[in-house]
Image (cartoon, rainbow, N blue to C red; front, side, top):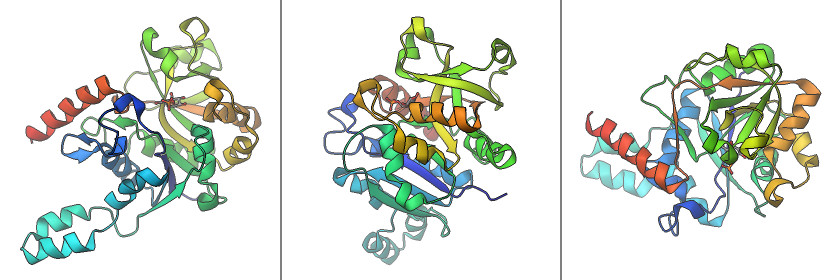
Length: 289
Ligand code: G1P
């Protein structure tokens, strides 16, 4: 069975929760320690085996595409000054990995952003990584865990995979929340390891009283190509947006979907308080060498 080569990273959000930092700099380029946040997300995808990254953005986000391109003038200048090691470190993307950007047009929500990449992805299956979420690269092995695990599961059993992790009651209203197939599944969740099992639905950002569980969608998905057909039919719902969660529910009815429990922890780089905590964590790890 073919491996998945493509990943979509939606980068069209304006980052209102990150103002004023995000007023003229895309929030995805704000630093976590010594690198922009999206560097870790792309590195995660590439380490898991992805060969083609599709950024879905708009005119104000072209600096992100530039970050992943070779800056030939800078490269020449650095090498002329004998700074070859620094020049090499800027060109870290492997030669067989490419980064494309496509524009979303209208800001109609996450589901619409993913659908906007369809002309590039074509008939292939693909991964989606939300760049607000940065998985902890210090505690898990990106070559085997989380996204890499999900890609293997998909290749082996053909079920689309959605990464989930347990969140506090006070946070369930911020996430897509999983409805499990049977109550027994909850007892099967082994904390801090990757496991996949069937899910019967998702509720997008429910009130605590309506939340079917504490298992939140983390922002990593592996989809069979049919999700595009369902996204194309999905009507705007919560927040007036075309929700990815609604298309996933349709995919569950058609072919079944599994959740994968997360190993390690993740950081929300799209919210000011958790972004600052994440920055400190990354900086301390890197300063400690
Ligand atoms: C999106 C998804 C939600 C998911 C979350 C993870 O929401 O719609 O299901 O739990 O990302 O960060 P957003 O945070 O973009 O509003």
